[in-house]
Image 1 (tube, each protein chain N blue to C red):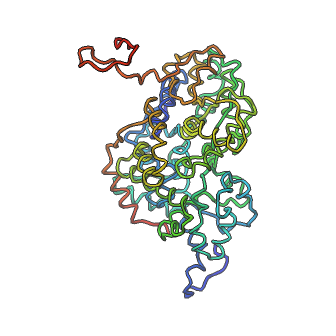
Image 2 (image 1 turned 60 degrees about the horizontal axis):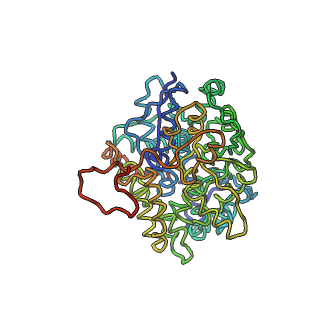
Image 3 (image 1 turned 90 degrees about the vertical axis):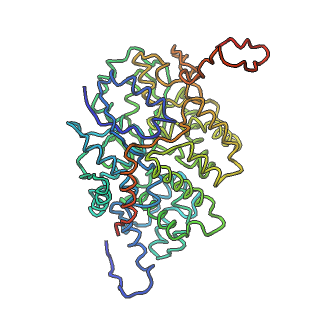
Length: 200
Length: 333
């Protein structure tokens, strides 16, 4: 939705921040339709740990406050439970907007430039270790993921995770080595091409 | 026999081994033929989507493209894991809703000689297939060992009933499909108001207290309504509630919110296997952290306390002599 045409000569890119976030989201985000009712924050199981409720975050976006929005820990604390999505009276695809904000925060580097950003860094690190394995093997690999992630982000807690790992192993619930798909070269070619493409 | 394309997902081969084992045991009773999608790849879970858009959807798109190529009479893809189910459905749905996304994904897939037309497959969860295709009457007719007296909390988690792009479920927050199925097995299904609340997902690895709070709430609810076991349809939910149950209870205790009982977390397919009279040893029992032995023995079902298939193999008697613990003969096992 384009409610008001924005002067294309206006040098401030933040004027169009809302439009930009919406365009970078997978489906039709409907972010423009938010009526600031707060149903999302009231439905959120992890809102307590967020810098801003989803409603607050969307207000920042609408106000063109790019840096504040991309620094927020809110998208990283979102657990993708879709409670807000099914309750939103305006059908805003809130969870997908959170994914967009994460990728924009990583690209701009803003996700990690404040000292209180432990969750953002841990979450972004977890995702990047995860996708590193997927890109390499075509499958996720829990042992490699948990080990690398713990050593990078929670080195002091890492040893205490050993009993869990041993427990999973003893119950045959862990693969010590990763599985590689047959078409890994095909997958790599697809991902390499996809990395050059954008939807906006 | 109904034929489906099957997308197992990575967890089925590791942490959710019990899900895969029990499913393979009940396939014939359910009259289902699940044909695995050849050389499927990871769906990206909730991680790839937050990194970059087109690669995340191309990753999922490869699976859809492989499935539609392999589809031979069957256009239905069944996923057993909630995140896989949602991601496959999401890609199919958004590639159609936003044609530019569909175009870009297909541009990437073309590099691998693949293509996917959104809408050409129907993406469904295993529970959906069992309740709506196979049917509760069929399930009921196959029960030889009703789970009478077993108080089960039906736990669906988030990503099966939500966001529900294809309107497959009876409700987004309080769907009754799992309740109905468990009741068909003869179980006493308890009221479980948090049945579609979040298990914390990947938060155990990122912000453990956030996850323990969510796991703790679920356990508190199961405690309030006096569940014997919690039945789940999702590998992530099973792992979080099972492997992190002790941590979550400790976290709750530190806040003065005590949880009296401990809850075995079982896949619904394991309970189906028991009700169909399958040997519990073949259903993945014993792989759970919180043992199901006591709860199941109350309804007269003996399940192994340890993983029966993972015992170390007997050492060769002709090997070099190894030190032996005092009091043990060294000849046992």
